Length: 376
Ligand code: SAH
Image 1 (cartoon, rainbow, N blue to C red):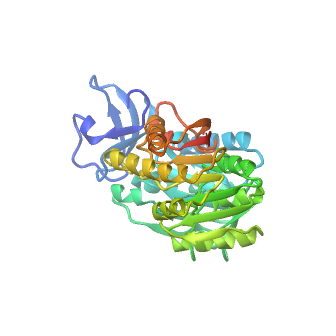
Image 2 (image 1 turned 30 degrees about the vertical axis):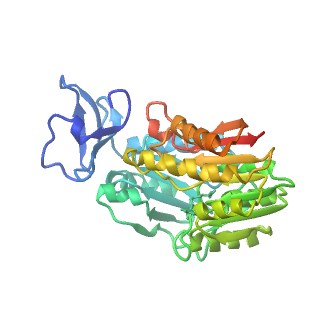
Image 3 (image 1 turned 45 degrees about the horizontal axis):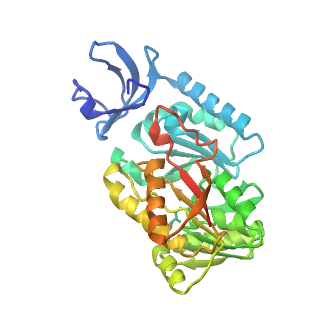
């Protein structure tokens, strides 16, 4: 925390008042009694305080507005022609726990912590409305909220609910997203550039998109001229949304509701070949304690995917687990290659797009690792 990380764990503190109120703004001092910074507290969370300001400045609505303005200004500069994007990426934008996105003209706010919901959001709601959205949706559905003693919430904070799914545009592809009802699908903006890469490599190739969700990669592959696209996801809601998206974009995708682990194994037993395989699974490690099991799972799916590739075939493999470092992930893929007898070249190693900034002093912000290999 002294080096700039915003999290203060309960165990790191010497004196903790036992009457801390949820969401209370507190000052944190070092061993010599000097104030290091101020943040919001949550006595229910192992991260007792998340630092908002350093030094003597007290956080308030004006301070929060400055953070939001800075985040929005950066996005407008970095992604000038992109209308659907992440405007605030929590800790990485100095607003711990708070995610703000624009989807189909609606502002979508996702507070993952009590302080984000009860302190930052009230400070910022008018500012968010001033950005001119059709409405503001509270989409507080992250499972991590349970560590903060929070339940799930999905409702309008301002404006009327959208009449149906909204259209999220990404480089010529349209994703239909249910902000409130129906499929309750979302959209992950972090893979934007990596999807474009896959689209550019797809012409004339047979593509397999495992863990496809609503078709993030599969749609770009189909639009990029793939000869055939197969998409696998174990969720029926995701497959329904993917099928709807394929229709909306006038492309053909073979959508299969299946466990990807089983499907990958069956495909290799059937001696199926794909020229490009995308693996973009959910976070296998939700915390450091899950790391060994997560690395085994990454190794397993990569090994199975490698067996489907002919020489010249491409593997685009990702991890979005905050607890898995780039080195850990590369190690798991390397171990898979050794077991699969796979030899190949690293075409590139990529992270999240620029609306998900990485801060050097906060390793957790460097969570998305996307490794691309070509089989030789
Ligand atoms: N690639 C997607 C995002 C994937 S999110 C995109 O670009 O938008 C991870 C997906 O994996 C979710 O849709 C989830 O339903 C699916 N999933 C989780 N476990 C799975 C399993 N064992 N087999 C297949 N799909 C799985």
